[in-house]
Image (cartoon, rainbow, N blue to C red; front, side):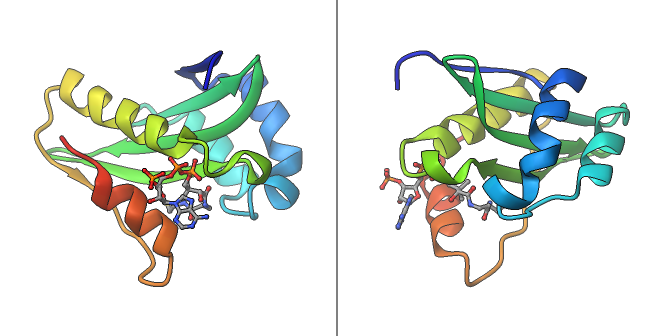
Length: 123
Ligand SMILES: CC(C)(COP(=O)(O)OP(=O)(O)OC[C@H]1O[C@@H](n2cnc3c(N)ncnc32)[C@H](O)[C@@H]1OP(=O)(O)O)[C@@H](O)C(=O)NCCC(=O)NCCS
Protein backbone atom coordinates (compact mmCIF):
# COMPACT_ATOMS: atom_id res chain seq x y z
CA UNK A 1 0.00 0.00 0.00
CA UNK A 2 1.33 3.40 -0.96
CA UNK A 3 1.73 6.01 1.75
CA UNK A 4 1.79 3.41 4.51
CA UNK A 5 4.26 4.48 7.17
CA UNK A 6 5.35 3.06 10.49
CA UNK A 7 6.38 5.32 13.35
CA UNK A 8 6.66 5.26 17.13
CA UNK A 9 3.32 5.75 18.89
CA UNK A 10 2.98 9.21 20.40
CA UNK A 11 0.47 10.53 22.95
CA UNK A 12 -1.32 12.26 20.04
CA UNK A 13 -1.65 8.88 18.31
CA UNK A 14 -2.98 7.41 21.56
CA UNK A 15 -5.56 10.22 21.82
CA UNK A 16 -6.80 9.30 18.34
CA UNK A 17 -6.84 5.54 18.99
CA UNK A 18 -8.29 5.39 22.52
CA UNK A 19 -11.88 6.54 21.83
CA UNK A 20 -12.25 4.02 18.98
CA UNK A 21 -10.58 0.98 20.55
CA UNK A 22 -13.99 -0.61 21.06
CA UNK A 23 -15.59 0.22 17.70
CA UNK A 24 -12.66 0.00 15.31
CA UNK A 25 -10.16 -2.27 17.03
CA UNK A 26 -12.38 -5.05 18.48
CA UNK A 27 -11.91 -3.64 21.98
CA UNK A 28 -8.67 -5.52 21.69
CA UNK A 29 -6.62 -3.60 24.26
CA UNK A 30 -7.77 -1.34 27.07
CA UNK A 31 -7.05 2.38 26.78
CA UNK A 32 -5.68 2.51 30.35
CA UNK A 33 -3.27 -0.33 29.66
CA UNK A 34 -2.16 1.21 26.41
CA UNK A 35 -1.55 4.59 28.02
CA UNK A 36 0.46 3.07 30.86
CA UNK A 37 2.47 1.13 28.27
CA UNK A 38 3.47 4.39 26.59
CA UNK A 39 5.10 5.48 29.85
CA UNK A 40 6.79 2.12 30.46
CA UNK A 41 10.46 2.24 29.57
CA UNK A 42 10.44 -1.50 28.85
CA UNK A 43 7.69 -1.20 26.26
CA UNK A 44 7.78 0.06 22.71
CA UNK A 45 4.71 0.82 20.61
CA UNK A 46 4.46 1.60 16.93
CA UNK A 47 1.62 2.76 14.70
CA UNK A 48 0.86 2.25 11.02
CA UNK A 49 -0.40 5.36 9.25
CA UNK A 50 -2.03 5.41 5.85
CA UNK A 51 -2.14 8.94 4.43
CA UNK A 52 -1.62 10.12 8.03
CA UNK A 53 -4.61 8.13 9.37
CA UNK A 54 -3.72 5.66 12.14
CA UNK A 55 -4.77 2.25 10.79
CA UNK A 56 -3.04 -0.13 13.20
CA UNK A 57 -0.68 -0.46 16.10
CA UNK A 58 1.58 -2.99 17.74
CA UNK A 59 3.76 -3.27 20.78
CA UNK A 60 6.44 -5.19 22.60
CA UNK A 61 7.76 -5.69 26.11
CA UNK A 62 11.47 -6.01 26.68
CA UNK A 63 12.48 -8.47 29.37
CA UNK A 64 15.98 -9.47 30.40
CA UNK A 65 16.54 -12.02 27.68
CA UNK A 66 13.70 -11.71 25.23
CA UNK A 67 11.16 -9.52 23.56
CA UNK A 68 7.48 -10.33 23.80
CA UNK A 69 4.86 -9.10 21.35
CA UNK A 70 1.98 -7.72 23.40
CA UNK A 71 -0.34 -6.97 20.50
CA UNK A 72 -0.76 -6.31 16.84
CA UNK A 73 -4.09 -4.89 15.79
CA UNK A 74 -5.29 -3.38 12.54
CA UNK A 75 -8.31 -1.11 12.17
CA UNK A 76 -11.27 -3.22 11.07
CA UNK A 77 -11.86 -1.58 7.68
CA UNK A 78 -8.22 -1.94 6.69
CA UNK A 79 -7.59 -5.61 7.43
CA UNK A 80 -6.35 -7.95 4.73
CA UNK A 81 -4.09 -5.35 3.11
CA UNK A 82 -0.74 -6.38 4.53
CA UNK A 83 -0.70 -3.85 7.37
CA UNK A 84 -0.44 -6.53 10.08
CA UNK A 85 2.42 -8.13 8.17
CA UNK A 86 4.26 -4.80 7.96
CA UNK A 87 3.78 -4.10 11.69
CA UNK A 88 5.13 -7.56 12.53
CA UNK A 89 8.09 -7.05 10.19
CA UNK A 90 8.89 -3.78 11.97
CA UNK A 91 8.76 -5.50 15.39
CA UNK A 92 11.17 -8.14 14.08
CA UNK A 93 13.51 -5.40 12.82
CA UNK A 94 13.26 -3.65 16.19
CA UNK A 95 14.12 -6.89 17.99
CA UNK A 96 17.26 -7.24 15.89
CA UNK A 97 18.19 -3.59 16.35
CA UNK A 98 17.92 -4.00 20.12
CA UNK A 99 20.26 -7.03 19.80
CA UNK A 100 17.75 -9.53 21.16
CA UNK A 101 17.70 -13.01 19.65
CA UNK A 102 14.38 -14.23 21.05
CA UNK A 103 10.95 -12.89 20.14
CA UNK A 104 7.94 -14.50 21.80
CA UNK A 105 4.19 -14.11 21.45
CA UNK A 106 0.96 -15.69 22.54
CA UNK A 107 -1.93 -16.28 20.22
CA UNK A 108 -5.36 -17.68 20.86
CA UNK A 109 -5.62 -21.09 19.18
CA UNK A 110 -8.91 -20.01 17.57
CA UNK A 111 -7.43 -16.88 16.03
CA UNK A 112 -6.71 -18.35 12.60
CA UNK A 113 -5.80 -15.04 10.95
CA UNK A 114 -3.27 -14.14 13.62
CA UNK A 115 -1.84 -17.67 13.46
CA UNK A 116 -1.38 -17.27 9.70
CA UNK A 117 0.19 -13.85 10.17
CA UNK A 118 2.73 -15.21 12.66
CA UNK A 119 3.44 -18.46 10.86
CA UNK A 120 4.33 -16.52 7.68
CA UNK A 121 6.93 -14.43 9.51
CA UNK A 122 10.60 -15.04 8.77
CA UNK A 123 13.29 -13.75 11.08
C1 LIG B 1 -4.45 -10.34 13.02
C2 LIG B 1 -4.44 -9.01 12.30
C3 LIG B 1 -3.49 -8.06 13.03
C4 LIG B 1 -3.92 -9.22 10.87
O1 LIG B 1 -3.77 -7.95 10.26
P1 LIG B 1 -3.99 -7.77 8.69
O2 LIG B 1 -3.48 -6.45 8.31
O3 LIG B 1 -5.39 -8.09 8.33
O4 LIG B 1 -3.02 -8.93 8.14
P2 LIG B 1 -2.38 -9.06 6.70
O5 LIG B 1 -3.26 -8.37 5.69
O6 LIG B 1 -0.97 -8.63 6.77
O7 LIG B 1 -2.48 -10.63 6.45
C5 LIG B 1 -1.58 -11.54 7.08
C6 LIG B 1 -1.99 -12.96 6.77
O8 LIG B 1 -3.14 -13.29 7.52
C7 LIG B 1 -4.01 -14.11 6.73
N1 LIG B 1 -5.28 -13.40 6.55
C8 LIG B 1 -5.50 -12.05 6.55
N2 LIG B 1 -6.81 -11.80 6.43
C9 LIG B 1 -7.41 -13.00 6.35
C10 LIG B 1 -8.78 -13.41 6.23
N3 LIG B 1 -9.77 -12.52 6.17
N4 LIG B 1 -9.04 -14.73 6.19
C11 LIG B 1 -8.06 -15.64 6.27
N5 LIG B 1 -6.73 -15.33 6.39
C12 LIG B 1 -6.43 -14.02 6.43
C13 LIG B 1 -3.32 -14.35 5.41
O9 LIG B 1 -2.57 -15.54 5.50
C14 LIG B 1 -2.41 -13.17 5.32
O10 LIG B 1 -1.27 -13.41 4.56
P3 LIG B 1 -1.34 -13.44 2.94
O11 LIG B 1 -2.16 -12.24 2.53
O12 LIG B 1 0.08 -13.36 2.50
O13 LIG B 1 -2.01 -14.72 2.63
C15 LIG B 1 -5.87 -8.40 12.20
O14 LIG B 1 -6.75 -9.37 11.68
C16 LIG B 1 -6.42 -7.92 13.54
O15 LIG B 1 -6.21 -6.77 13.92
N6 LIG B 1 -7.12 -8.82 14.28
C17 LIG B 1 -7.64 -8.48 15.61
C18 LIG B 1 -6.52 -8.41 16.63
C19 LIG B 1 -5.72 -9.70 16.70
O16 LIG B 1 -6.28 -10.78 16.71
N7 LIG B 1 -4.37 -9.56 16.79
C20 LIG B 1 -3.45 -10.69 16.83
C21 LIG B 1 -3.20 -11.23 18.16
S1 LIG B 1 -2.03 -10.29 19.08
